[in-house]
Image (cartoon, rainbow, N blue to C red; front, side):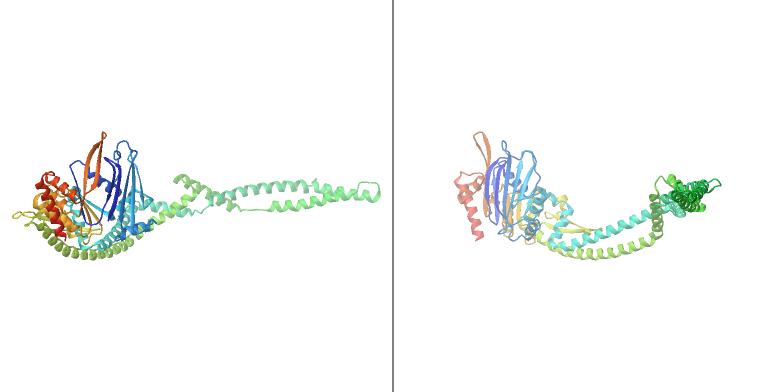
Length: 554
């Protein structure tokens, strides 16, 4: 429940500190006093969007704090634990600072938080009900949500959603497979031609480089053979260097044998040995053939083919190989598409059967639950001074969806003798307020959200009906903390506690104050709501209203 709210520099509120306990609380005050500012503060703490102009004129920022007891709120505890936010004694404090430009900062138990965090947490803490909520009752999708909440269909709806999403995903795959098969089939001849051309080319990675290497090496080998043979001719020809050196060595040896003081023959012999060794190496080089003419021709042919295909497809060798593989896959998928679609269809049929079973169970629970809901709501409408009202839920079959196989809609005949019409077409504002309260009272024990805030849902209502609405809110206060902004003395008198919102002027500034009321102050405020706060008779009537509430409670 909400234990305390602090409001500083928000609109006309300079500073307000408001403490609450459980039960039913009324917030009253003159029209225009600023009761909606309190509601705005609570909304902002629960993640409502901020806009420029919220900060009190002349101040830099508005600061809001809300303190909540979450002892019985496991969802909120899980939220905090998931985000590693500490909480002691089940205390939760939300703080939001709003600046003049509309930007804001938020903290949860002192830890920085985003607006979406506040929204998620706020939905666990507070339900805000006003004219917009009554309008929501006219939305048939929201009506079905009411029914499912009453029937406790959360688990079944989750299963239904998951199964429907699986079916949708499978059907999407079937459609994609069909479209892909159609697209490929239209290009089949072209794809087969490309695949044939690329497959026949038998391209291999790095093949172009390898072929160019063969051609380059073969050209170099021919040059080596030619030069080696020319060198051999110089060495071994009739007047070759090797023969001349041999003759030189022979003559030097003869000279050396006859004469002592002559050039030695060893140096010339070394030269002769060198040339002999050189001849052997040149002969080997002259005979060496790295690649055959056939290999060279084949390499040149492969280079020409690769260049042709590169020009034709405007890409490189690796991309040509990838294109070939892609065409193979596409044509293979075309051949396999029928069997793939058959398997996908089997899977879709299986999922659909599962979904139909879930929907059938959901339908059964809805129909049974809606009958009880109709009876409960109708009974509570009778208690709210609509004694002849008829309320029912009607069902329309619908296509299988994430929310089942039917759509429920509320119908009502507010008065005797009138035919039933859809709630979205027939009910007035006052009637919608009573339908809303009837729903909330019916859902009181099932609704997990601890705080209910009603913003003038009693608008357009008076007399005995107002008293009945006050009693309904009083009953809701047994299950929730109920905060009600009201103009009706009948409603305010039945509250467990009351705050008064007043607008005052001081030193040329306007302020809105929010004050808790004691017994005598409540009598005075209820007398004001009755239209005679200074009349002894009216004051006595106000006192009697409060005394009656106390007697009823006891």
